[in-house]
Amino acid sequence: MFDTLRAIVSKTDADYADIRYEILREARIVLNGAELGEISSNTTDGYVLRVLKNGGLSTIAFTKETDAERAIKSALENALLLSRNTKKPVVFAPTEVIRGAFLPPLKEDPRRISIAEKLELTRHYNDIPLKQEGISMTNLQYKEVARDKYFSSTEGSEVREELITTTINGLITSKDGNLIQNVRVGAGGSDGFAVLRNRDEVFERKTRIALDLLRAKPVDAGVYDAILNPNMAGVFTHEAFGHFSEADLIEDNPTMREKMRIGAQLGNEVLNIIDDPTMPGQLGFYKYDDEGVTARPVQLLRDGILMGRLHSRRTAAAFGEPLNGHSIAEDYRFAPIIRMGNIFIQPGTNSFEELSEELDDGLYILDSKGGQTSGEGFTFGAQYAYRVKNGRPGEMIRDINISGNLYRTLQNITAIGNDLTLSETGGCGKGQLNIRSCHGGPHILVRNVVIGGA
Image (cartoon, rainbow, N blue to C red; front, top):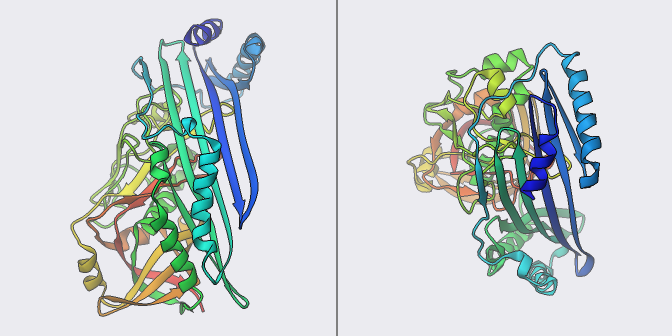
């Protein structure tokens, strides 16, 4: 394959060119309640060519090798047109020439497991909630995505990497009269099919939560001190802070660039945040990004001070900051954009018991169920919470929405747990879908959290 890719990029009369060829294999099983809604498998492939000419950067996707010459011609024409109509010529930060291949070690390759066995396992987990009185519906799916990627550039880099993602996830719905509660459930990862075996406890625990929510009371609106569990802490880190660490999202926003300047004291001194895609076995793991750059961990916050941000080759040059391998494409249809890998608050020194004692009275809030951000503001839903009195969790409550300002919240994080849990299922829809975007963290104590409710 590299001979073919090398031949294509060698024909480009450009300052720089690269091409990515990818074979994409997907399998999907969907259960709606007891009914089998879908079984599908699909294999597609294609190319993405990028051409840099006179400061104009053009991208074109095509699916047949025979279309390569036409794609080269179109990409060059577009790059020249862009170069004549831009005030900011594109420059790529230099990177090392890499020749290598990485095929991740897997604990059972899902591509070697029959579709019948995958269906049997998905049905087994789906039956766990369905057997319980009070559970009205389930929507569960098995999803497998295998990307076999080949990258070649005019600088001489030639990289192959496989990314294989396997998950079972969905919703469990409980009902009592007119009251309906939904709980998200999921298991999976990037290190093989074995991660899905023997996970009954995950589905049993989520089933109990769905049923308990039918007896929970709505939260009273107000301002609370709160402990966020690793999932909630991770969603806050990803959505409210992480996207502003992606250089392309603040590049043309002078206000955000000033606030997110390197060296700014953004958070409490106990707060350290990192994005590290080099963690083997984690959902967001990869060795090379889709520009052929070696992935590197990036210390984003240290002691509450902004230390770094995530870059592509273009933005690293534009900001004059270190390149770190965070440019990722959804698949062969897309050019890469800046994405998070494994982003999380780094563990502190406090046990959960110590956090609870320091909290004293407040809320223990668990598991995100979606939300949105608007500039510095954010609003997230939580699946459930517990009232905490004298450092002890009590009754379950529901219908929780958290809102706040990013920078005030970073300052209000006053204690960090000594645990760390990263998500097994992920996803980020910034421009393109990234199913391997991973977040998590330790438990964290946050003061003055605004809670919407009854």
